[in-house]
Amino acid sequence: MTPDIPDIPDDLISQLSEFINSQMGLHFPQNRWKDLRRSMADVVQELLKDHEEKDPVSCIHRLLSKPLTKKQGDLLAKHLTIGETYFFRDKNFFNALEGHVFPRLIASRHHSRNIRMWSAGCCTGEEPYSLAILIDRMIPAWQEWNITLLATDINAGFLQKAEQGIYTRWSFRNTSDQMINAYFKQMDEGRFEFSPALKNMVSFSQINLVGRGYPSSINNTHAMDIILCRNVLMYFEPDVRMQIIGRFVNSLTPGGWLVFSPSESPCFHHSELQPVLLSGATLYRKPESGNRKYETGNLLPDVFCRGSQKTLSPTSPIGEPVPDIFYRGSPNTQLAPRDPSESNLDLYHKALKLANMGKLDEAERCLRQAIDHEKLHPEYHYLLATICQEQGRLKESAKSFRHTLFLDPDFVLAHFHLGNLTLQEGKRDMSEKHLKNARSLLLPMAPEDILPHSEGMTAGQLLEVVQSMVRRGGVRLGA
Ligand SMILES: C[S@@+](CC[C@H](N)C(=O)[O-])C[C@H]1O[C@@H](n2cnc3c(N)ncnc32)[C@H](O)[C@@H]1O
Image (cartoon, rainbow, N blue to C red):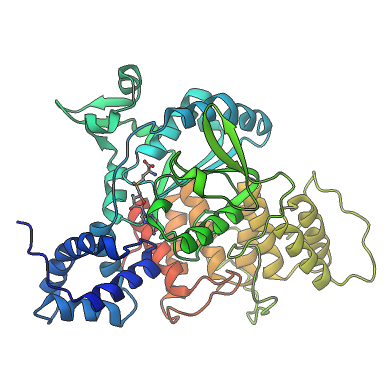
């Protein structure tokens, strides 16, 4: 039964509308207060079940009085977001991907075999799964590639539905029967299940685009080749929209593409993006030579050299083989002659700066010189690990994260990344061990504590990511 629309006074609905704008980006100007009141009827009804408040007005006062809990945020997202989507929405755009963007990207990644895409505001999954189908058609051996297809949304219910991958005909408004037959299994009269193999290409996670947690390798939102954010920002105020587009620009690799829907594109200009018309669709490109800058990325440790106070233990605290040497030099990395006036600290800072500009090869050369002279700095190995990770050299990256932990067993982000990498490799036990370590290091911290080397991520935010990985990855963390 639909609940009655609560009698919320104008000044309170105005405060609520500002609050929702600041927390979720959604814009409810005065002419949409009626919609807001209607949606709040459902929110309030669910909140009243849990709280002591007896009436909608005090319930809303309570919502406004403190930072939102996850439960409150999920409730607001459930009732305020719009979930309209379907497979292959906007044919022109998919033609542009198939005819122009992918062929060039695939050719240029022939050696690294690495492609990274993000569907931001993915709703119930139709958009990222359309990308997965396209990848399958264009790279038949995609399993031998390192494909990242991240799909995020603020609405936990949408994400749950996306992970199930079960759709009705309504999602196939723009999909041929041939495509449906090839990629879906009919379950009964009206329901179709998406191919389990392709489902695995996509990783879903809950990200609020208004938050400042991206780009970051912690939630895998960095160094993207293609970001789709279609039919999302049109519900946001221009200021919030521009901040989000600015963060997307930082999440893109040089030469990467940002895509809005056709109705949004004409209004969403950004000085660092070039509009490109392809097959009747407008896509935005970050110039090849653009400076890559991580505002919140992992490559800029904010505390340098906090120094490990630990004594080195002869066996690794995480039960993995202890590295016999720290660095022998990668066969591909020629060390440039070293300027004798440069200290290791200078070299490390230079490496950081280069990494932040996207000059990863040069950054690695500098860093390896520093490591060559001073092998026992966990920070150096951590930075090396993140550079290798960014270049898709995941085995080397894992090795450097292990070196970091050998030198500093409490390096929480190294545990987190290793948990992630080993989960991707299907090593569930190892992943469980690292995530458990990350969780036990995070739990005693205050949620608002900023994590070293995370450029602003708080302990509470990382804990949330760890818990969400656990929920989605099926890892057992125990009590
Ligand atoms: C209309 S759907 C668009 C789906 C898909 N991108 C498409 O074009 O078909 C808008 C999506 O944006 C999501 N959304 C709204 N506000 C958001 C926010 N602050 N952060 C992340 N996602 C958000 C909604 O939950 C919804 O799934």
